[in-house]
Image (cartoon, rainbow, N blue to C red):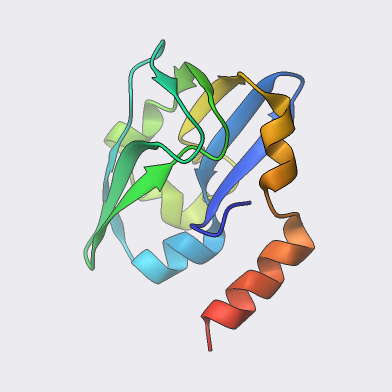
Length: 121
């Protein structure tokens, strides 16, 4: 997890990235998701797209560097999926990681939960 509320699920060299349940709850009803193209390259902490809700627009950042293998086209037609299933079906992109060592700078689930609790107060 990142302090900016992105998650990164790793399977081999592929990282599945999206926004967390905490982030979607803070944003409210999501009305639009802007995603990159497959083949695009991003460095860690680069903005790769944005998410817009009835309350606000927010950039989404890559937790690790790599090349976009796949984008979740379903979110284009149904951005509200992010509200109902943020950390499962509503992933944003799949990246082929450039440097797996970058994963060490991310928070685990317990650290992220503490981060959210601090932010909520």
